[in-house]
Image (cartoon, rainbow, N blue to C red):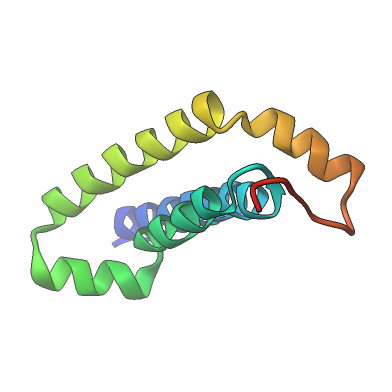
Length: 102
């Protein structure tokens, strides 16, 4: 029981972390659609979506999907998405967004 609670808390932590990455990519930088896709993808880490996924497929498969999706989000955001540059841009211009992709 306690291990399941810790696993859910860890999943929610990563969901909030990936939601933040999507938020920064959505409002600062040159590709708001990339940020929107990360926000939508980060929803698989929250409880309501996890319950629906566990009803459809096994828990082991859901855990593997979460690991692969988390790795892809980190790889895309840190490598391709230049997350740290966008984060610096956000810190400089915080109240205002800076979207250059339109």
